[in-house]
Image (cartoon, one colour):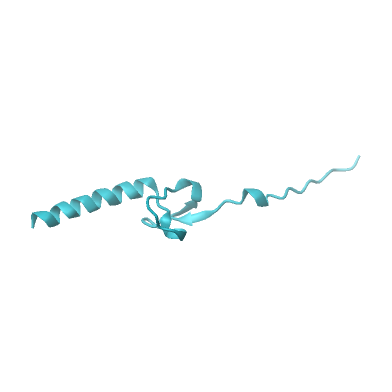
Length: 67
């Protein structure tokens, strides 16, 4: 008997790679959060990056208010 060769068209499961707007690392889009109403590629960020950014902004705001 002859061999059967199958070709699988995987166009439906294309993975979208995008970049975190804070750390600039590239990953699958499913790893990102959309924390605001921004659109396009700048809307994506890692949850940990967002949390670190918020903490940093709070500390800077506190320091600015003390001066």
